[in-house]
Amino acid sequence: MSIKVIKEFSEKAKTDAKLQEKLKACVKIKELLALGKEYGCEFEEDALYPPNEPQFVAEQLSEKMAKALLRS
Image 1: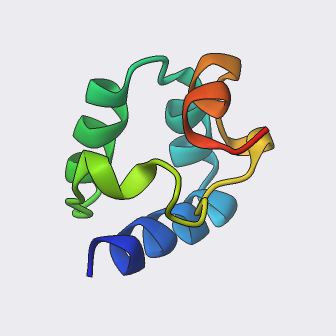
Image 2 (image 1 turned 180 degrees about the vertical axis):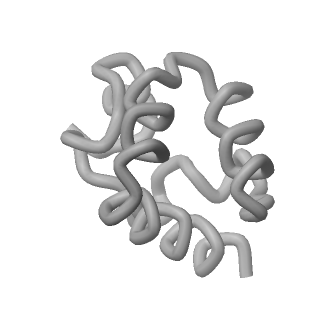
Image 3 (image 1 turned 135 degrees about the vertical axis):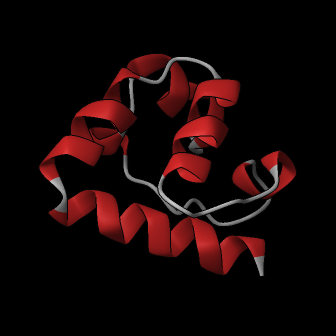
């Protein structure tokens, strides 16, 4: 369930300019989780990390978040 919610949040961020800005500004997981909650998408931190498939692309995230969440 959490992966589905993350995917929906990621897709919404691709079309919502304000959300895109806020997502790109997140440098801590805590900030990302709070942003998701602000937009009605509550998900578990563990679901963000590998070995789960990444639901974001590097262009959506700050450099620090991309390193933490995306496979190199």
